[in-house]
Length: 294
Length: 290
Image (cartoon, rainbow over all chains, first blue to last red; front, side, top):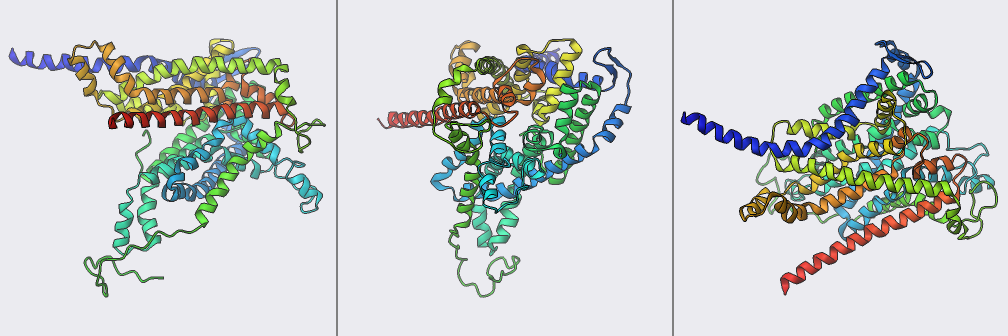
């Protein structure tokens, strides 16, 4: 008898403690369920349908669509992955020395430098990209005079080449790589470097064996924050690129909003999402970082 | 190159009579110069935007500097679809900010203040929209609206913006409330406060900076969103959609002018809030010293 009373009391207490978190999570969770999960299911269903905009669509479980789009848009898939890797690699090379300098040598300029780093965020994404189109224009204020002076050939151009698209992506996502790297380096315990020095470590080996391993969570977060949006982006390819630089995002946008081929567009979207999830899982395994959800 | 003694000689490396001398920090100029170059690269398009908003164009293209003019600032009101687009953007951003901040803050409180079954799963679930490319988020929502036969317009944009903002709000508020001590709230209750009073007078003031930061972020993300909005806008215009439509052939000066105005307001607000926080900090310190 007494035992039941004893167990009943903590249980009701536990329920009272458990009640609030679930009711706090419910409204937002429902919103994400209805407008994030359900759309994914709906998109999966659309990708397996057949039909046309005029005659309506019918669910026929046609998995062939997936193979069709892989064959039809293989170049755009490969190009997107290639551009994404190039952008992430370039940003690692550009941002590591930058974040290192701000974290270790910033001194009293630290906050000012960080503010300058996020300055582009005060200009909207689409305008930033358009300004690069303006700067890099074939007869713009940079290339125009250089061509008139004869320093560049008349047919020299950057726009509509992979350089322009990758360059635009690098510019737009630079803070997403620099900030996580900065955070990881900033919270590093500096006395570890003194310890390495005390143990006769050279500067290079102290960097390779202390600083670099400790900054890996920043490398991981920065890579994800730049690779995922870069691989799915279509603005940079649309504004700065040409017909030979279309990415998978352009295909999705075109199939959905211009050609209205919903099953194909949905199948491509799913393949993109699946590819990213697999890539992230493999990358997380390789780096051995479990800080995925912060 | 200095010869490095093996690390296995724990106490005294051969020849060493004193403790190792700490080498002074190397003070090269290469890293600072490099940092300066990156900053110039980051700021260049912003400068171009500001300067070419004052450019008096003669031809159809705004490519070279001609004459200084304020004309484009004066005639901004002559573009009714621009005004309409800005109104839509502000309306949607305000609605999306309020709803997503309330819902997201509730979720962040649940995740930081309570241990419960499914907490790790909830964390992962909230992280998922952040790990999904925008184009997939936009396309999947469009799939849903098409399936439901729902017309696209301001309502569907609002729904989409609330969806992608919730996760950002949760992450931001969580980061600022991680060290939050529940016992302070319990103390208020022990002193006879109702749960609501305890929340209003203890919890809310403590988490308020995080909530405010999340709301500002949500507003900025909503005003700036192009991709998800493009998929779910139907025929409606928001500011980024207007910019995109107006810039099919070259960048019209109005885009530079609007970009400059938004930039100046944003930077002023950011610097102002930093200044206010610093002053409030000084007041608190002064209060303690008194």
